Length: 632
Image 1 (cartoon, helix red, strand yellow):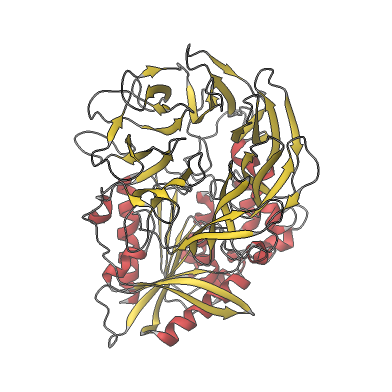
Image 2 (cartoon, helix red, strand yellow; image 1 turned 180 degrees about the vertical axis):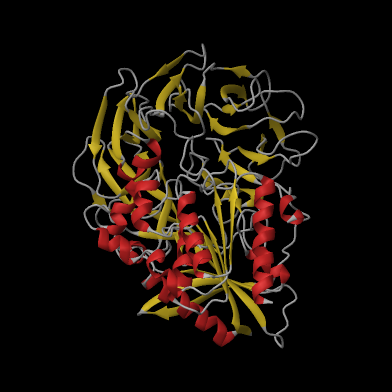
């Protein structure tokens, strides 16, 4: 854990429009009285020739602030967010990339996010939640309810800032929560994904809106029958491209690529047979093609799409990811459609910033040059289940000896619409480092995962826990058949949907000898009324719990809990809005009553993502100790 904690994280990377420079955000270590969560912005040449990156900051010297959300203007100025004046309260700042004075542009109270310059360079848009009690998104710790519940809703709205005067004007309606946006080529409008009501809950039913900057006039141009994300205008302003599909979580979108007229009208799926999941896109001006990134068979890829014909050209694939600190994809493209910047990370290599032409990137940072894998080799595996081809990753123990027999831990990813990839592990509930302690770690991507197309992602609809468990068990059998894993020393673990699958697995089979369920779901019926994002459930279950309670009961671990005899450790944050603590209470109470070995830990002031470093370490220590106790 000490080794992982020393790894510098990169939160975002953005290439300048002319492709000459790259800016990135790098986490600062929590030391010398500086709390965790501080970050700094650096700029360097995109060709790797600059050996000493220059820091851009609203402060002086190497003072620690939270500074991020870099936005390049068409002429090379840089806007960014910083909490220099008041910890936790971000404001918008601007400076020249070449150096010089830094100008504070806003004086707002609330949450600010995602600044972006207009194409004409005359305005900066950003998302603003006035008097927000917390950061946006369902992963953070929920605000405790009091008084009349549900009466106060904080909407994230679109605002525009004049970079010359700093005057700020809110543009979008007060009752509309804006998630993402993109400027029109003529700078007169934005296209946005947005929804009325609770922002955390209604992302799943967001529509596409065109918002006029001058008047604030807002028009819905598409009410989709799926989740949507990453909207972008075509260079001629006539078409909107976006990603649509079955998505279980805001912030990790994937699916097919769709287009619709910017005036509204018929929807067109450009990639109906794509055996991958598009996760990011942009238009290339010079060719009018769409460049997109994808999850593909456990790997990452970059491809080009011709909107007229639907032809897809693969530009690059590899066993790594383009993200690090957060789940957001970090890939940026310059105006020429060739020069790019990425954050690259894999099981073998810690995160670093790279820049240059796609597939021929040069390394720009060497912040983690001392980091080495403390685990064994990682291999991509394939096996068959119910006629489906399933992929997963197997990480070998450090100092592997083929003449020994080893215990194994199965780590099931969250979502379910998500995917385990080759990525440098973090401290928060990533069990790959347990390979350092002599375990095989198996990361399956069962049906319902990204990476093999929309039909595969939809394959667990109205079937939670059944087909995906068969896929996992078939994968376990394949591993046991091919490597020296002790069949009587296999554990299972996961967080979120992975926590549900852990609870479900021990209630369905005695294949596993120990379990650790993080932020799990024990009872889909009670969960429907407890969580704060119930809109995500209807596309997966086909109806609300009030209209079809049987489909929810069919997949509830609590209804099979008397089958459990597996020692199970249960972990959760006390203010988790996605998988509330009562779900973990319910499963723990049943196990304790039935005499099954169990332990239950609640982490204070934590949401679905456990953010405090001491809590992250405690989770890893307890998880390792639990598996050591029952699998050694």
